[in-house]
Structure formats: C-alpha cells, structure tokens
Length: 183
Length: 361
Image (tube, rainbow over the protein chains, first blue to last red):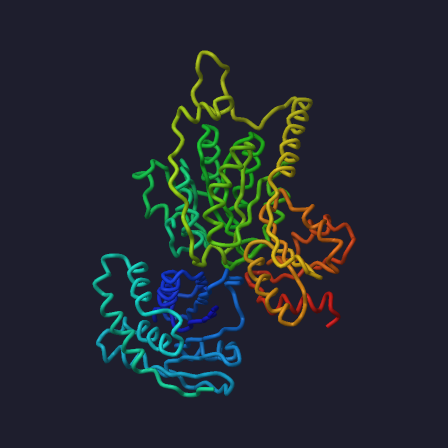
C-alpha cells in the first residue's frame, strides 16, 4: 500500500498539523512516512500545503506532481491541485468559500462541510480533525486507534486533554462526509 | 526497536549532534536551516551533556569559534545555508590548512547571491571543488533521507577526526524541511579531557606539559619547501580518502539500460522517476553518490559496459555532471537535467528528460 496525499488550504487552517498527525498515525502502524511542506515567505492567510506519503515500502520521492488523494480547503488550492489527482483518485473538499466546484469526471469526489461543523462544535480549531475524519471515511488507510496514538505522539503532553475533543471531531467528520461522484 | 520519531531533517541534525557527543555548535541563523540552532536552543544540551550552543554575531565569527574548538581536539560543528557558507569559506580553508576536524552542515538554497530560500543543489562546486582558496578537499556527505541526516552527523565527525580534515554534510531545503520517520542514535558520552589527550594529544592544544613541545594550530608556513611537503601530505590524505571512504548506493541497476546519477533530494525524485519509467518499459537505474568527495568514480565506470546513456540529475545548471563526465571519459553519452533557482523537478519531468535525451521522443 502506498498513498500519496496533498493537503492544501489557507495558513492557519491546520493543514500542516493534520498532515503531521496523519504521518504519525502511519508510523504507529509501522509504515514508512514522509511529510513535505511548501515552505516559503507564506504566512497566516496565505496558502499552505503539505505532501504526505504513507507506504508499506521505502518511499521514493517526497515531492510529487500527481496524487492519489487531494484534500482541498480553499479555492486557490482547488485551482492549483484539482488537475493533479491521478485518474481514479480521490478529491475531498470543503465547500466553504468554494466558488468553482470540482469539474473532473474521472475521479471520486467527496465533500465535507468542515468549517460549518467546526462552528457547530463551537471550536474552529476542530476543523482539521473534522476533515481528517472525512478523509478516513473515504480512505480508511489508518486505523482510528492509531490516529489516537498519533495524536498522543504529536501533541505535547500539556495538550493531551484535548485528544477526546479531537477524536470527537474525527467522528463528526466520519459521519458527515458526502459523496459527490463515485466511480 | 530504538527511539523512533517523526522529525524534520534539520531538527534531526541537532538531535544527532547532542546524541553523538558533540562538544559545541556555533552558528548564525539563515533559512532554510534555522531549525538546527532553534532545536538546540530548545533542547538546552548544556544542561544534559555539557554541549555548548552559541549563536555567534556572524557566520565569520561562528566558523572561527569552530576553529578554536577544533584546535582543542573537541567535536565541534556549525551549520548554515549557501550565502552563509560563502562567508565561512575562509574559515573552512583555514581548518583544512591547519588539519583540524570539524563538521559543517550546508542546507543549500538557490543562488547566486542571496538568491532564494527554496531548495537547490547549486553549491556542489563550492563543496567539492573548493569554495575557499588552496589545494584542499572536504569530505562531503550527501544525505537523501531524514534517517541519513541522523546517521551522517556521527559519520561526519568520525571521518573528520580520522583524517584530521573538515567534513561537510551537503543537503538542501527539501531534506532539511521535510519530516520522515527516523530512528535516533543511542547517546554517546562526550570525550573526557583524558580521552582527548590520548586521542589528539600530539596535535591538539590540550595544555602543554613538560614532556612535549607546544602544539600550535596554524596553516601558515612561509618556507615554500616545507609548504610543498605539507601539501604532499594533504594530497596523500585525499588519496587515502578516495581509496577507503567512497560510499554510494545502486538502485535497480542490475538490468538497467540507462542510468540516473543523482544525490540527495534529486536521488529521491529519481527513484520515483524509475518507477514511472519502468511502467513505460524503460529500464533505468540509479547510482546515488553518498560521498561527493571522494566521488564514486569507479562505481560509475563499472556501469559503462551495460548502460547506453547516463542522465545526471541535480537542482543546478549542471555541476556534478562534470564529475560524471570525467568518470565516463566519453565512453557513453552523458547529459544533465536540472531545475534551479529554488524549483524542484518533478519525477515526470525527469522521465521526460530521459526520453528526450536518449529515446528520441
């Protein structure tokens, strides 16, 4: 199994930390992982993206042009990465702020109202874990128990009290992902 | 199983330094390697192992602090990115000239000048062919994974103390900034003063005793005859490195009709390009130099009876390709493919370059 993922959105949405938790979850089930951020003079409000790869084998390039899954969280990222999903691959997006919805017909498309659900939960910081839940529903590549262990590893101990809230957010995401197009 | 973590390459350099018993780090911040000193400052190794971490007032000060620590026989290091390494070049040639061991890490960014903060491999010439003045060489290690960032810190110190010559880890913003699974090394204690005297007492400034002459760290000798003899000694040392320290990795070479030669992050990109090319029926392999000096010249030559063409891939306008061509000496076609100025080539582009150069497409 090799899963090549791009997560892309605004700085401040938790894109990089979602990728980190996903990568840690992979380590918890003995997979090889890589996490490659776009880095640069991009600050809060700018665009942020990270390429995460989980594999049972040694990972070749951490830098990719084509992805098995794209998780897209703003319009700029939709414009940039929709075309980079491999045919037959998966695109998951939050419709919040999206003015042009995905147009591809050769990929699986799913929608998750992450921003709306985070507001409903009364904590905007749960956003990225809601999205993570949506991803795990459509691509169950890591077990939930390993995500929990990944959270324990990647969060400093003083934040461990927030893990139940994160798990709740992931559950919310699992329950609320909608299929737009299934091949 | 040891201590497994998910860490950035830069963070791992810092952690590996603490764990291998490094005595001192002297640096000055610059993107994309600032996490090295940041991690050290957060870890506060002075409380744990006694390792000193100093943010110097400039790169020039930092490399001269390294010179001072190295003169005492200590395990000392510095790190920077391209423009900062240029500032350190004087100190590096002095280290080589005084036969001092030290580790220098360059997390390369695009140049020339201040350039960009994005990754590049355009400092190959500087690392391998000189950078500073005089006939000197650095031992140059090129990690291609976060694991190797860990492993090469200890290896770099080991080789630099074995040959009394500075060693460099030549990496780039990709390996420095990305996180991968890494198994951290076991802790090794720092050398005691007695161990340093036993190991390096013949040359290091460990404190003069009645039974020996003063040890002096210098690269100056105005007597040309002596200077030539000294240069012979350096050259003999470099030949010994070429004999004993060449490291490389071959991937999918057994049945290869074509060969990529690439190091560091470009080697990772080439591994993906191999997967893509083989899906198209193009049999290509990779020879990945791990030491850039000494260079795996013979390993390339051994492939010449087998391959029809070699593509050197590097995030530069074509620097390492010169060493590939020297090795090949015209026996098979050698071409270069590179992106630069901070652009990272994609695996698809590399396959396309292979096809365009050698398969008439």
